[in-house]
Length: 141
Image 1 (cartoon, rainbow, N blue to C red):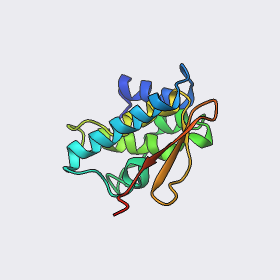
Image 2 (cartoon, rainbow, N blue to C red; image 1 turned 90 degrees about the vertical axis):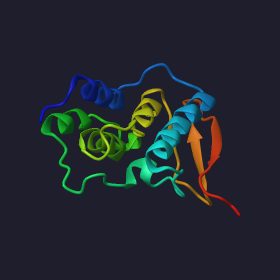
Image 3 (cartoon, one colour; image 1 turned 30 degrees about the vertical axis):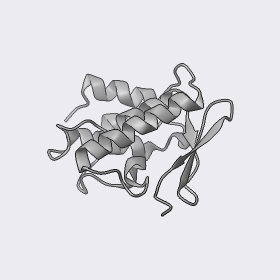
Image 4 (cartoon, rainbow, N blue to C red; image 1 turned 60 degrees about the vertical axis):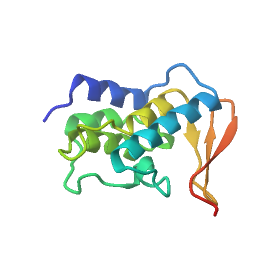
């Protein structure tokens, strides 16, 4: 199945950079991703792994050749697996009718955001100027 126009647009966001956003705006994109995941699952994930593309929505999912060609130009710090998870969510029968939690993350990259690996339950998000904010990723209780 070929890519839809929306899928192409989203993948192109992963390989290009739009207006650069500050940390607070980037945080909002992450909050949207978490909120969409919560709507689908009924609760927030206990770790960031699913939202960061660490989950395979469909084990049999193969990246369409057209998508692979686009993603070949993806900068390594943009974590291609998020775009792949976006496509898998968009195409799998069990998830496609729900708001895609990976879509805001594609926008996050497009607008100049990066993150570091979660340490001690905190995910650091950086803007293009090196601004940083920590997001609590699990309960400390």
